[in-house]
Amino acid sequence: MNRSQNSRRSFLRNSLFAAGAASVATLQTSPSQVMAQSSEGTPVLAPPMTSEPINIGSNTLSEGPLKAAVEAAARQLPLSGSYGGVAASSFKPTLARQLGVPEDYLYISPGSGPALGWAVQSFVSPTASLVSADLSYEAGWRAALKKGAEVIKVPQNSDWSHDVRGMCAADPKAGVLYICNPNNPTGGITSRADLEYALANKPEGAVLLVDEAYIHFSDNAVSAVDLTMKGDVIVLRTFSKLYGMAGLRLGYAVARPELLEKIKLLAIDDVSSTTYAAGLASITDENLVPQRRAYYGKVRRDTVAWLEAQGYECSVSESNCFIVNVNEDGREFKRKLATYGINIGRTWVGYENWPRLTVGTEAEMAKFREAFTAVMAGKLGPLPMPEPRVAMLDGRFEDAIGAEHGLYELGSRIC
Ligand SMILES: Cc1ncc(COP(=O)(O)O)c(C=O)c1O
Image (cartoon, rainbow, N blue to C red; front, side, top):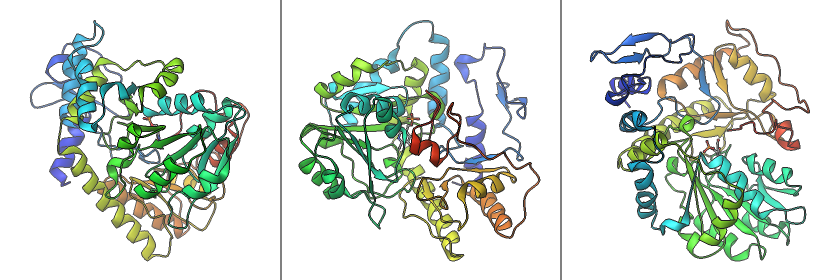
């Protein structure tokens, strides 16, 4: 992405109004954002000031949604007085066609996080465990623990893939085998052959839950969507990552209708018509996925090469995140980097020295490299160091210990 595309995108990202929404008078702004006028006289938010913190900690994209998605959502906004709308009714058939599955194989949810929780809770119980890789995304662990189910973590392979053989053998009474592909936080991928092995060899009665939140970033991960027609497989996808729509909340589950029926007993499927409009515009743009995949793939390879050239080991990633061994407590390191306004991700139990980094734009990663170099040289930045986060039974922390013990605040979000 060149500079002019970048500034055009950030202009569009901050544009709250396109034609249809110009009548709205007041805006919620962050303190550091100021109102400005575009050349067309449309009120917009000025781009964030350069001193604003850089978030490379939650695997989201600061460039936000596609321009056409912002415009489609803005056109939909004045029509929000009624339920649904054209985009809401076209989204599912369009998506089903693209994925090559019948429409009744789709469950649309406000982000894939809720669908993940509902899917886990539909198939685990105090006598049916959740089997996951160690390490992996913890939201499913949390959902299982809330249901009184055991969470069994099987160490990943040395190439950062899931040990599917170990996972299939871990518990004959497993209710769910969770495979995150590419994995969060490592970005490691699990091969199609291994996914097929898992489907063929999972314990009888277990559901294979394949979380493809990051698959759009990968060159080599092969989707399990078609496997949903062959067995007890549920695939999850989200618009929060490559599509840049985390705040709009859109995701979906793909599975045989009998499996989806169980999820629907728990689920509340409320996706707004503006979100549907943005989602439809995003999936009908043929260039969005390949362009962003290529751009963030290059930034990731460059960042990893830079870190490795200095001796810092990184996971082998095909995602917009990876973990890096900073050779000291990752939570401390995260606090130090925050003094430069650079917010990175958390650590996992057993990988306390390996915080997760999100791959941002070239400009964001250049700032990260500067701050990283300074912190490694023992220099702190101008901002106060954040308080260490302490594990408390009432929640509100997002580190590895919290994940391990399922002590998050009820309803709190992890990325
Ligand atoms: C692997 C994985 N799955 C699912 C989600 C849920 O994302 P959302 O609820 O925003 O769709 C996330 C969010 O970070 C994630 O990392």
